[in-house]
Image (cartoon, rainbow, N blue to C red; front, side):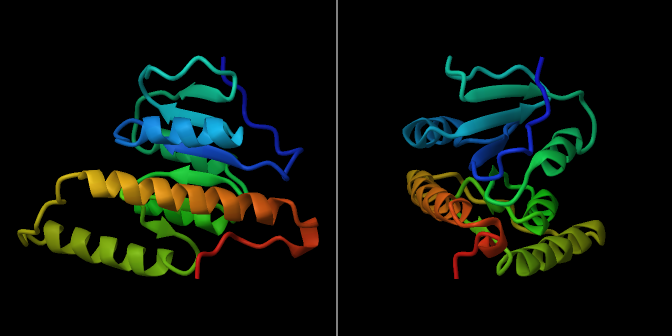
Length: 174
């Protein structure tokens, strides 16, 4: 049974994966293992994960935004969230976390406003009957960009987490 992550040690960096449709779970597992980071794989179904105590499966009930709510409720400053869900990213960034989408796009406090605006515009266009172009195919270059962005995010988050509490700030990439 999964327990809620403890907030006591805010000097640690953790990774949260919005896992149901995440194409880069294996890459996250490798990076998390290399850095020794605790990783929460949050989904509404049982997913295979490597047999290591640092990777924890969190199975939530089915329903709209249940996994997103669990992640947003448990994330904190210096954590890293892997998700393509822009509203979830905004909630996590508001708590001081950094979100990366599977293509390596970093959604931090400097980028989330524009990402939300574009997402809402496209949603409005679709709801009004406009035909919008679908997403492009996930390519090898996307996987490479993701790995690079995740490595950068981990290094920055660990450096920030090591600072005294009064000097910490949300992770920014600008």
